[in-house]
Picture: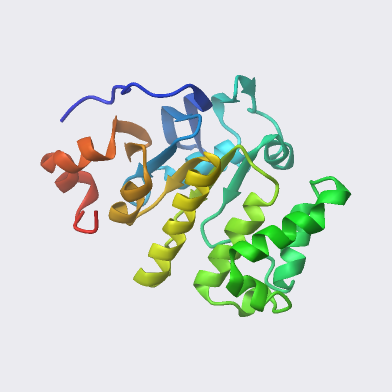
Length: 249
């Protein structure tokens, strides 16, 4: 297996260096380094319990860590989650995290509060136009939506603040294969239209690698491999050890 060395990449936008984090006295991340280049999609793969969600929580400010987290050279470590969000790092958490009792429109309205007042309605309508199903159900409580509709609402809510980096934790979790494919088509469209940088944690490696510029494999809180999706696809030993079935690529 190749060592975890960096392939040539674009200019770093989000940078994580020497990150240590955990819960109580148990350390989960052991000096992890991750880079999301400007305008690229990075996919983080690994087994359950490897540290993927912990990394996302550290970057978003939900969990304290030691090490360095930077966005375009500016330190984010130690900032509260709402300040990190306003600086341009948006997280779609595992389980979507929508406000179940609020309508689709009200969920978007809450997210739009970080925008200038004059731009809020325009931005909300833009995202409702992108997701016609949400527009049709704009007055329905988020908790009454299907899993796929909730995921689309979570993506729209994260993007309405015009983030510089979009992070998504297990976006296909609990979705049908058809809906999972539709969600990843949304990611591809966002990237193609605006060059939005993304960090995606996903168990469905086939779908994830289909939209990725770079792939990372994490095991035991350490990055054990990094390279292009094609490099990963061609490494049978690596796929067998860490990924499983890649027939969907």
